[in-house]
Amino acid sequence: MTRFKEILPKVLPTGAALLLFFIVSALYFAPQFRGEVLPQHDVQQYEGMAKEIWDNRAQTGEDPQWAGRMFGGMPAYLINVAYPAQLVKNTAGQIVKIINTPAAFVFFAMVSMWLMLPIVGVNPWVGIIPSLMYGLSTYFFLIIGAGHVTKMWALVYAPLMMGGAWLTLRSNMWLGGALTALFASLEIGANHPQITYYFLLAMAALWISEGIVAFRKKHLPSFVRRTAVLLAAGILAVGSNFAPLWYTMHHSKQTIRGGSELAAGEETSQEGLALDYATAWSYGRAESWNLLIPDFMGGDSGRAFTRDGKVAEALKPYGLEGIAEQLPAYWGQQPYTAGPTYLGAAALFLALLGLLLASGRNKWWIAAVSLLTLLLAWGHNFMGFTEFAFKYLPGYNKFRTVSMALVVVEWTVPLLAALALMPLWRGEVPRRKLLRALAWAGGITGGFCLLFAVAGSAIFDFGRTEAADFMSRQYYQMFQAAGMQEAIAQGAPEELGEVTADAMAADRAAIMRSDAWRSLVMIALAAGSVLLFALGRIRRGWLIALLGVIVLIDLVPVNLRYLPQSRFVAARRQQIQPTEADRAILRDPEPGFRVLNLTVSPFNDATTSYF
Image (cartoon, rainbow, N blue to C red; front, side, top):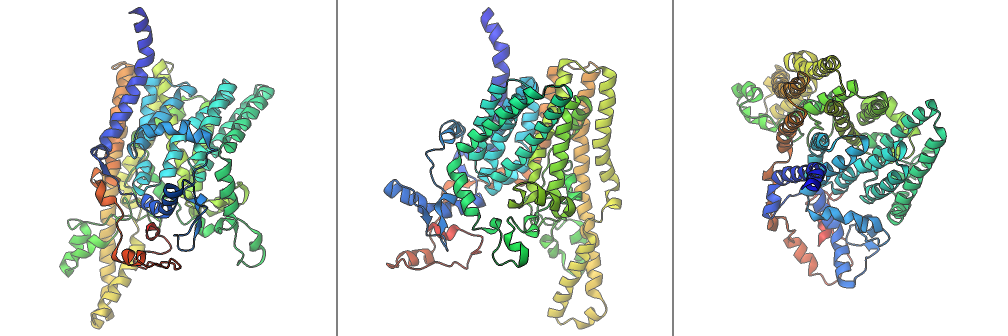
């Protein structure tokens, strides 16, 4: 019995954390456990590309080297090829298959974060809170819904790769080196180089920070040895994935990432993507506020106004209220977005508290890489910095969708929150210091929410100017098609465009205002919990429990806006069925033709290749 009492405190947090993470994941993706499936666009495209490879593998036991069903053909190693030499991925990497996706994505993301946190000195009970923050980040649910499978697996392995680097540079360099090699291998094996690249930037920030500390404390020989171990871990990780990396690098020279032979002058020797193409998906400066307020920019691109809003009300006298359901609530600058990169208002409050309470060695490199990746995500909205990065950051010009850099912030914010909670758990923060930090963190994050809720309409125009110009042109075409020349001469299209734009701005302001109040409430709840702890009204266990509930009620409802359970369908509805055209083509005994399917976008759709 005595031995059991000694073991229980060590085992209990592990069991509680794993059980909680599984329950959260299973409840969110409950339809999955009823046999339903989630339609994912990119997964469907992948199935179209890979079907020929799967068929050949089933018939011959070998992988083809060329995918001939793709319209112009494609190297099979860029789609699906089994590499026996990827021993780490084929052994340790199989553990994630004990739970099926998509629930596995969220479960293992939380587990990975939770396993990393003790490495940085965070108690397992405390680690549950930042792990929930990381695994429930809204961006994860957007990419799960889209079917960005490799991206999600890369985000699962990234925390433990970073934890290995932390351990190597700060503590047990041999154990840290082994951990880094293992999870860097899995990270690279996930096959999303852009996600890996951004976390390598975070690792570089940690390395620079530790180098400065070593220089100041005259520990440079130890730092050099630890750096060598870290480099060796990286070489092992790359070596364990050498085959796919080699083939991809070789092929990239024949793609737009390898430069263009049609460019004029000196541009013919330049490699990398064109800057305007690479920065097409850039995060707007103002749009960055949706890290704190989810629908700050109106939500996703597909969201339209409703018939009971101000747009419909303004157009009702003209008999045009139905137009409201065709107009976008989103007013950001991205060509298309499935939703905001919401981190959680409570999470950001605790992260700021962490900046105020954590030691300098722990926080400044995290703050620096958070700012760096935020600026990189701005892309063409901060073009001078973006051009500098494209020119001087090795390999950075190979990547597009620069807004993806925010994945690092999705990790650093929960990490900073952990660094805030840990000194509270240990009772290391004097009450006066804690109350002062609490006032600053709550005042800044809550103050911005209050400002936008009360005075947002005076600060932003909610895309009113662009909407007025666009709608005026639309009404002009509508009136002209109807032969209403007199109304056009009297300026009716411009007048109606102004009316519509005013109403659109009012509805967008209302959407932002609602979520600003919501975020303020979440911050107040989190700050109130910490205040009760600071005043001695609740114990540390209750503080963690309260914050866990707040994180869940903050993030889960927002995630359900963009990936609701209603998206799941019966498995049979997801089976790809041949059309009459497919059946007719398959009856052709001469397979010497290419199939051009103009019922879909031929440059962006691979489902035709399935048959």
